[in-house]
Length: 457
Ligand SMILES: *Cc1c(COP(=O)(O)O)cnc(C)c1O
Image (tube, rainbow, N blue to C red):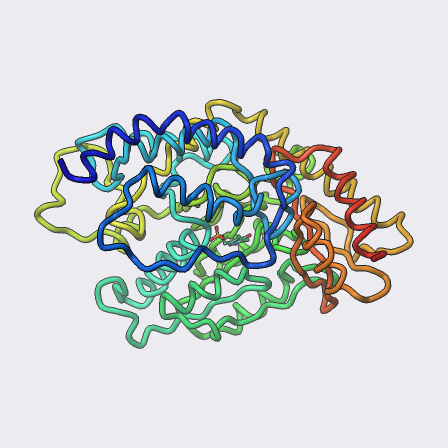
């Protein structure tokens, strides 16, 4: 019997221990150091000739790696927009590895039909029009990449070219955006449109939202047939929203593709008071959203949707004899980047079914209320200045003494709270984003105490 055959039994024997360790880790999440800014390293070791076997590797994990992880799924990790993992999503994610389905071709598993169902549920959750098609991606970056691939294909078609087939050649394409996320710039480089080629549309005063009149003028003046507009539904610092209805009307008039990046901001649609900010989203040509941020499923989950299945198909579909299938279902590899990939719909299937629209609506409302509570405390404090009143789940502020970097460093070294640097209208600040179901009001109080001590030290 070979080592892998032997380890099958080891796995069965160890599963109770691994599950018990997992339960303990989750129970202690609240008390673990929220971040490890000291950059822990695994012990130096070269690849063994003879493997150690699962049992020894499990012990090495517990001893050598486990102490080095942060508590990013915990309630006071407020960096980036990190999100947590709901209990149901975690169960679904564990099972995804157990059953290890490849959501590539159709006709031999229920997996593709489940992903199609989940995409439909996501449209219901976010109240998006039916008839959108798409796929689950590795994250919002990959969804933005699919958006730009489709946009590029459309811009090529406007000038008689099939760019997916013939390459970008001399196609004339211009991209317009006010405050694109860094990942959109990366994507423009990847798809050959060029990071440096974005025409920057001015923003409204004291906002990261696009000045629609300025866009109108730029589109009127643009002599090029291929036009793409990247709009934001929730910018990372101001959580500002572009006026999608007005922008969509301009895009229609000027034959421009409208891509909306709503990685986390789209969840504002779950809140009746904030619902109006994304009116017009139904007119977008393509939409990006994230599962592994505010939707609280484990990493490896973004969402891409488009009204143009034909263009997506042109970008993603390649044929080969071994890929033929008799199934009536669409093949998801024709709607995404990968040929083979993880069954990333299952954690969503669990979580959406377990908590429903109300469950996620409550989480979004709670996180926004927590951001507002932190902002109130900062405003009342003698030591901090709020750089902008929060609209959604992000707070941006700085210490009045001007020692922003030192305050953030002390805060993050304290192990209670983790935040990241930010900038508002050219001023350096500290940024806190609430996006986790675990965070409660007592956590906000702990955050305030940690800030008071970080600024005073
Ligand atoms: C986080 C984020 C992205 C990138 O998403 P990943 O899931 O990290 O790839 C894109 N756009 C916006 C607005 C984001 O907040």
